[in-house]
Image (tube, rainbow, N blue to C red; front, side, top):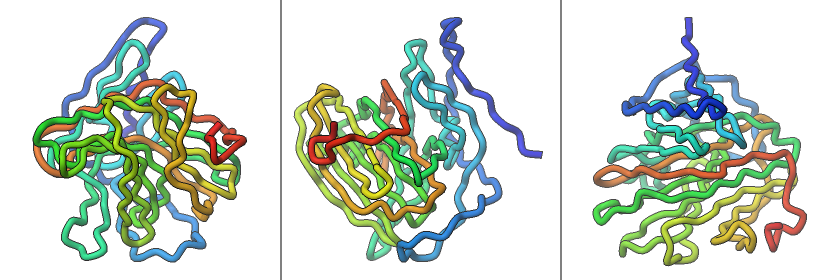
Length: 252
């Protein structure tokens, strides 16, 4: 019998719980609906049930043991600790492919509008090449997108998007001289757009394309550490609503 982990923070009582382990767990793969996007072979997903409650969202699924990598704070924030060598990327030439990143997910009805927003502070370190805090739209192991605040090859901090349809692309966007940024996805069911903001007021679009994901998908968060050390990212003000932005160019 599957054991359901209850790790819901009781904010009203000022309690906080901490987990320091971070090990992948394997459960049966859920049924996947077909999608109009042509993708490669879908590998089994290491999904397990969880119940991580934040003020603006409840995560119900953990990928690769994501629920064992978090520390919930009394103010509703969440620290997400990722150990080295863990990433998600499907390299077109296969050399850098990795599918081990711990992630927290919640299911959504993609036939309805949605907006996922989070304030993120990634665990940037001197040796932490490609360390990042990520927001995800996730259908399966070969069909997803991540929106990242990431450390690049020169140690700079920039917005990055990776869209995977069988294999991944890799798009570096603006360089930002800050350690904290707001990230956002928004969909009106027809389009899916990615944004960043420095103040949660003025938004900058970094990517927009047709929403061809299946009706049942997940959205979520992760901290990645593909190379060395540890990346502990802070997530604050995480919210999920069933509305979309009105102006997809301005993100408001």
